[in-house]
Every structure is written in C-alpha cells, then in structure tokens.
Image (tube, rainbow, N blue to C red; front, side, top):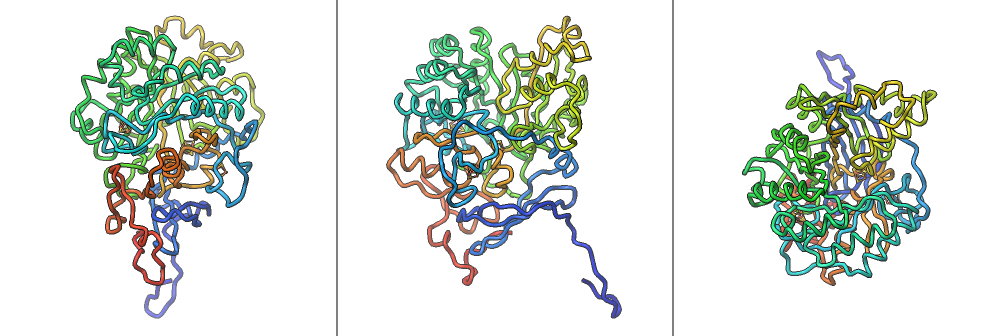
Length: 511
Ligand code: SF4
Ligand code: SF4
Ligand code: SF4
C-alpha cells in the first residue's frame, strides 16, 4: 500500500506465487515451509527458519521455460519394495519410503571416500584424507542385492566415490553388477588411472564398463579452479585409451558461473568428434559438500546451460531442442539427442513432435504408444547411448528416420543438462519424484539430492568410518559470518550457532 497526496493506493506484489512446498534450513537442516515464486522472469525459492532467518535462492533462471517444462511429468512407477517407513515426513524418511512417487532409474554406489585428487569442488567431500571408508565385496554384494530386490531388473548402476578406479576390487564390483543382470554398469571417474595405467584400462574394457568421465573444459584456469590441477593431458590420454580399447564415455562437466560456462559449446564439439565419446552431461556445480564460495541468487541453472549451448553452437542447437525428462521431476534434467552427420548435428526434437507424446498434462490421445515408449526410454535418467535405436526401429514413426540415417556415419549424440538440488534449493515436490538413488551400505535407496543436502551423507560416512562427521553447510556468501572449515575442506557451523534461538537474533544469517 502506498499513499500519494492523502490517497491510499494498493500496489501489486513484485512476484507471482507458484507454490507452497517444503524445504530445509541450509544451516540447521530443519524442515521448513518454502514458497516458489516468479520474479523478474526467474524462479526463486524463499523460506524462513525460525532460528536462522530468511533464505532465498535462484531455482531456474528462465521462468517461461520452467513453466513449459512442468507439463512433461510422467506418472511414477512403484518399486517392488520400499526400504523405510513413513514416520517423520519427507525428506526425513529416506528411503525409499512408501510416499515416494517413482522407482529408481539409476542407482549410485560410492565405493570409497578416498581420491587421487582433492578438487576444490567435490560434493562427496573426498580426497587424500586421514579417515573415511572403503567398501568390501560383502558390502557391495548386499547393496546390489538391495537394488535388485527393489527394481527386479535394474537398468543402470554407477560406481562412484571418491575415485572408484583406485579401489582394489573395482573390476570385480563391475562383474558382480553384470552377474546380477544389471544392464549398464558405469564408472564415475576423473580418468587419471585410465590415462596412466593401460593395463587397468584393458581390464575396464574386458569387463565392459562404461565411463561417466569428468571433463570440465579446455582452459588451464578451468582445471585449476574446479580440480586444483592442470589435468588436460591426462584427460586426452585417457579418452584416447578408451577409443583404442572400445570403451564408451559420457563426458561430465561441472559448470560454475564465471569459471567455464564459456566452454560448453567447445566441449560438445570435442565430444562429437572424439570416437570414444557418446554424449555430454552438464551439471551446474552442486553447492553441497566442498565448493568455492557462491551467491545462491546468482547460481547457474539448467536454463543457463541450455541458453549458453544455443548461443555457442547456433548452427546446431536451440533451447527448444531440449526435452525435459519426464521420469523424474521434469525441471531436474533436460536432454537433447542429435544425429551427427559429418559436420552437421540435427536434433531429434526437430524430426519428431516430442511434445505430442510426452506432454502428460495435456491428456490427449497419444498418436502411437510405441513411439511414446521409445521416447520415454530415450528421455530418462537411465538412458544410455544407443537407446535411440528404439525410436529408429519404430516402423510407424511416420518420418522415415531409418532411411534418413542410412548415410549417417555416427547415429546419435546425447546432451544433458542436470541441475542437482542443494540445501538452498531443495524442494520436496522435486525430491519425491527423484529417480536417481544413492544405495547405502545398510540397503537404503536415498534420493541423490536428499543424500547430499539433508545430512544422510554425513550420517553414512560417520557410521562407516567410525569418525564423527560434522553437518555440512553450503559455502554461501550470506552464511560467511557463521562458517568454519571442516577437516575435509567443506564448511560447517559451530553447534552453538546451528541451534541459535530466534529470540537472540544471533543466528539470523539468511537473506
Ligand atoms: S524423498 Fe522420497 S523416500 Fe525420501 S522421505 Fe521423501 S518421499 Fe520418502
Ligand atoms: S570431485 Fe571427484 S575427482 Fe575430485 S576430489 Fe571429489 S571424488 Fe575426487
Ligand atoms: S537426483 Fe536430484 S536432480 Fe536428479 S532426479 Fe533426483 S531430485 Fe531430481
């Protein structure tokens, strides 16, 4: 309300209210209500902790794109079994608890906390550290069995860490996963061992593992900012070994504002040309675990990744070529498949009216269920290179794709934008439909973003290593007055500040 010359006038709010949901306080992790609003063309989450005050964070930097994305929301599928009960409410009952809306498309097993790098950015808070854990064969067998019990025939498992390639039993772990009928087994690796140990690379090829290969860019400054070292030669050598040995790799780039967002187009071009590379996943840096200081209102989102790619590769890509992934909550991940022919790149979304098949909200009759199922497989968290063959095999496609492909030397290349949630952006609406699950040694399947944000990672590490692990807090600019360093390089707050009472006003650090 404003007053001009004695007249009282009502004024509009500067934002459009989208939803009331639940999130957590980034400092004490208590569950709090959260609003999601559109302001200045962007989607922003706002919440308030009674002890630590208000917090705001950018969720999606293009509100129009966010709103059109939400229509791609497929009904979830129940897993065969849940691992926990509903007791304290989401996100404290992971999981999966019976309230969860989707089964696990992809399971992640972190085999160790040790790493041969100490990256300044590491959501797993790994490195050369005095404590931690390394899984045994018995642990991994039980975790894979829990995944099979929940899924029946799981599609994809990723062995991660730490650095999984330095685990002495990693080759056997891959064999154990395949022996249980899991279709696609991946190693999430920084590539150093594959570059420097050719015999190991031969073993990886022998057991048929695929790589989720850390690759952030080409500038030395990018490597130093994100990995703390110049790893350019190692990356190229590792990928060349993969090409020689027939190991397929998805490049995975952590993207941080002001560091490497100018390199996204060059990474795609490099991947398209390299024989070992099947696609690229761009992940805005997850502000959980260890990371450089950031401003939650300036963070990079999926929309920034898609806009940057369209600007840097205007002959190949437009933002409209990306399709929201409907199996998880559709704002989590968007994907584009391109058919590569020499120097041309033709996005599949220009050949098939994907919206006609995957806009579940419109509720109209689907022209062809076979095509819908093929597209659902392609635009899924468990999509693996080659999955586009299901679409190409559709005789009823109506666009004669197989013929169009006859002259094409390499069929398809996958590009993914995947924004993980952090303690600032966590939204239970998104989380309850998560289809990427962290498998824990006690047999739970915990949604990946909950694992990193809510405190589950710290609990599992403490239980497995026998060492107390502090509750981690994002290294965010508004929190700087409270933060102190952990022995792993991440940030925490002293216990007294974590439980500060609102009446004292002392702990109110949010914006
Ligand atoms: S995220 Fe899913 S498993 Fe975890 S508490 Fe919420 S509904 Fe349950
Ligand atoms: S980000 Fe990966 S490579 Fe870097 S320290 Fe963490 S686990 Fe190791
Ligand atoms: S891991 Fe996070 S970003 Fe990915 S599907 Fe789950 S909730 Fe969404």
